[in-house]
Length: 135
Image 1 (spheres, rainbow, N blue to C red):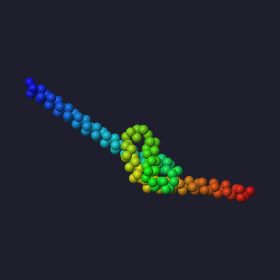
Image 2: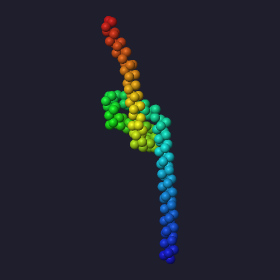
Image 3: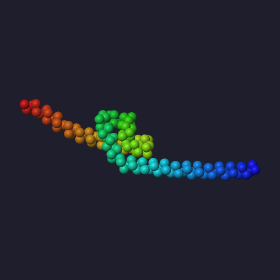
Image 4: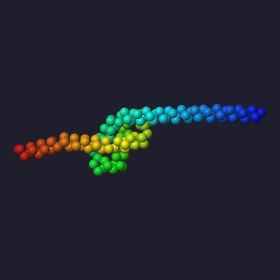
């Protein structure tokens, strides 16, 4: 009788072990697929995300842009501006690593925008300086 019960228990434990193993595999596959979807979304939406980063860093001084801590702080704030479903799928560490990888292009865009802004503000200052002299 004990052999019968032991055999039944062994069969049940093997069955449960197989179910747990198959469930584990399906969860790992699902998580892997979601990670790929998140990374694909990040690659596809990078121009918009990069624009948010550039606008956020535009007011930061030139010296602070090169500072790792300041750059990562702005990148983390930009992560919070992403849509909630994206933040759920995309790990923060992946986003920060991707941002760090594209740091040179972001800094270049910041410099370009800063020069454009100075070019637009420059003539307005010159005109205001010329008008009082004409009067």
